[in-house]
Image (cartoon, rainbow, N blue to C red; front, side):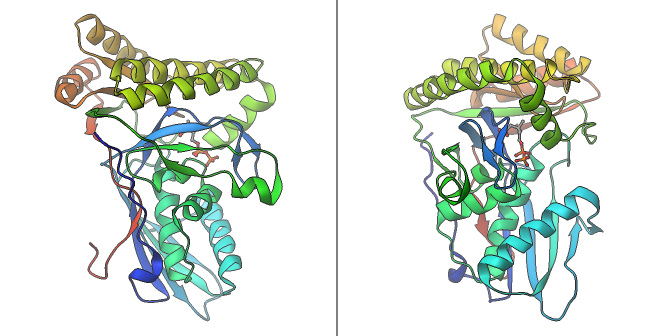
Length: 348
Ligand code: DP6
């Protein structure tokens, strides 16, 4: 597969001022983002690298509401509440400040990914919101600026701006200069026909948010520094493996990076443990697939679900093996997906 260097459609090219709709897909990190150096600007401690998926899109429409005294935010038709609501409002404030427009907005989001289950719903959510809000408020960001903007909603959203594989540069320092140098961009990939089989063992919301878990890990885990250091080496090796189209190397590096991240959490005080017995069952199955000669490698995020990297040609077999291992669960096959983009008036 060649990486698609698609840039998002620029806001002024489509849609009428004051209203815009956008679609974005989740991404799964093969080199994880885990730990911030600046909570306010969402500046990470390490670089990360991901594959944007072609399943579970989020569609968001933003309509300015001049004269309204509050933003009206809904997820799948239900008014947003709590932390999710607060984060969308904070994001809109940032866009209003940049646009120099005071208007409140109506924000309607349709999510097809189970929310809050470590399946990156905040990545697709804030990437779609960044594109739609930029369009509605008349901003004209290029792809880099859009990635930086999406980052302010949720770090991993910076990568969902792009199709296929993307690297998010941590950048250096603090303040405005650092803000400018922390963004994602596409990664060159040689011929590789990858799939990620998303094994959903539990689609319910998680007990500890990734934001809180990340903070606790950085603050208290004695293993954090060692993982962050080795993650830099993992990224360098991952870039080479992608450039060579070596799926086994990509999988081995991704798996060790994810296990390392979970080790840092297990050593946090108190421990954060997202992995459940069903997770371990899937991990055993992945190992068995490898023993049977099927290249398959696991990665896990802030939840019990497992994403299994394999060749596209093996994806159905891998998905079937996962379903048999966890009969109560589900397995979805994803390939590399498109970057975030504005939708036409007719929703295409
Ligand atoms: C485990 O991007 O959700 O999925 O920036 O606090 O919103 P915030 O965190 P978020 O964290 C994602 C963490 C991860 C790994 C990754 O996607 O790189």
